[in-house]
Image (cartoon, rainbow, N blue to C red; front, side, top):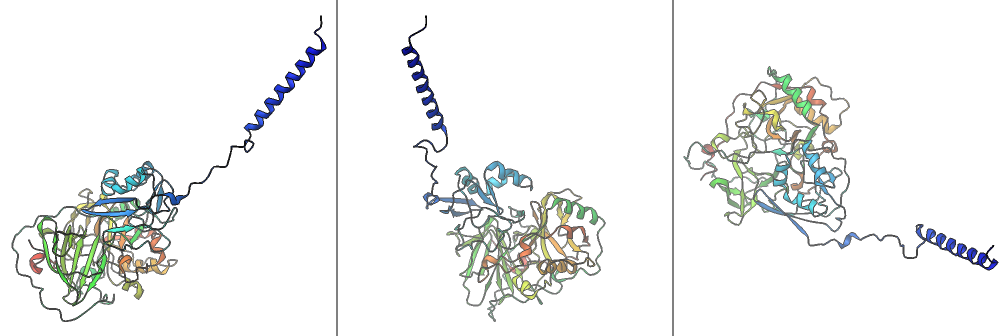
Length: 486
């Protein structure tokens, strides 16, 4: 028996209703079809706190870096690169021989920034500054304010030079009277020209390589160096000495050093500033008295009579050898005993278009022996006894063609051919040269060739040799100069 027609009509209506509900539901799932499905709003980065500070507790000198309002991305700007996690940064450092434990200890603020998911941008805290111009200048000795946003860069990988962290105990306690207290007779406020340079004519820094031959281990040492480094770096705006000039009107102060050492009558310019990285080299040129004052890790201190202190330091003669007797203590800064002006590329060199002195350089720590050869006195190398000694002199083959090089690269290559470079310190993974820190030049602009910021090809190393050590020079020391003393 068939159901009545009315029943069939009800069934049809029910099916149509269900079908309509299903289609409506399906369309509701499509993007943009739901009334409440609005496009996500973008959070403005200006909501970032403007008073958030990160304290750097490094080398006894707290330093503060402000987080800029533009900090909107998760990561850390370091070595000219942006890292989004600690794992990424750790892998990057490990590939360059930098121990994570040491990095974490020296740069706790960097790790804290990553944990806090904020970007520490602006002036890159690295051996080399970010490419593309001068970094943000350091306006005060104890603080660094980052004011620019930076997310990409083409800066090649720099390496961190390391220096000794302990002071060698002196072998004598005799403190003779100072011999350099004569009243100044001249006033000099500018750097000497590179044609005369610093130090005496017989200084190892001013003596051409000449006919010195290669040592028997040269090929092996050069090969190991070539295979270990990515490039030749030139430190210009960080991890390199900052130079200040004094005249007869500059106030003289007493500086205190670690382990009770004291340096008297230090001309302390009012514009004296300290670079932001955790290990710094400061030079004060006292041309009136013919002296240079070298300090490692200088910092302001309320407990020092001058308001300044340093981890290590000493006094050198501008007409001397440019080498300090580290064995007599305290260490002057560079692990070899090389004084800070020694081998330093000055703005005056660049202005003259040529470098008329030997260069200072650092090489990977594991490639440098714990021993030293003249003119070096000491070493912070960690290599085997058969490794290249601290103080070794590298020379670029004088017949090597400089064709194709730009003016900046050729300037360095000619100096390496004529004078060579002395290994004065150790690095974490590169061959590093040193130029006067441009952040403390009068106009705080980068005067150096752009090619120096891109890294110089390591192919030059293939054509280098380690030459016979120079004769032992006459060292500056605290017994001769009466400084430092206890």
